[in-house]
Image 1: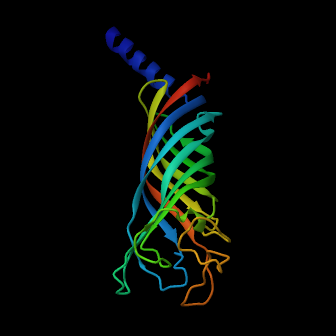
Image 2: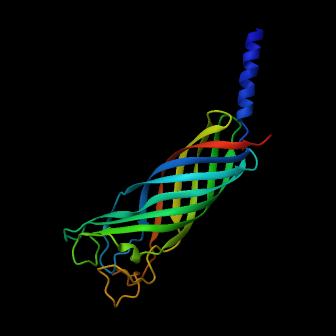
Image 3: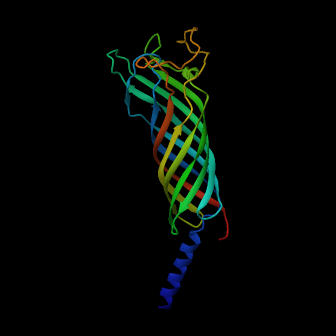
Length: 242
């Protein structure tokens, strides 16, 4: 009986001790997302039909939990953007926009639960920076080959909302795994208001890469978005006392 009580006390101590997540933490995450361009820019031509597009993201996180239930988190992320389209006009030309971004999120974190498995919710702004853009089968082009220097067509930065939810699972007192869903929606227009540069297909008379829709005659901004499953591992650097 004494052995049973000692064992129970030991397990209770480990569980109780693992509840605390206060303090600094750092970690890495990876995610696999669906990626979208909301309101595609068809450059004045008829729009193509959307095709499911996928892409990965890599994250380096650092944060501080003020209590076992409230914290903040920031870091660095690199992720794929863009969209694939299906040819629906009989031209024989498919279209794909490939974009690469880096970003810095500033997130508020809520943590729920009093066990080794805790639920979390993250939300906050993210500033993203365009590092690369390629267009295949673009509308304004001499041929349907890949345009690798298409970065001039897009804004260099984008502001948006980053949010996610999932669970933190304690492995040891100082190590936990997180798994859940993460999402990003860009509020800024991704199309450049003005652009000039080494785009071999640009007509010098154009002053903007924001073209009105042929259906409505008006321009609607294009927004980037992504969302998918994420998993990571975090280490509590200096756990605070309760």
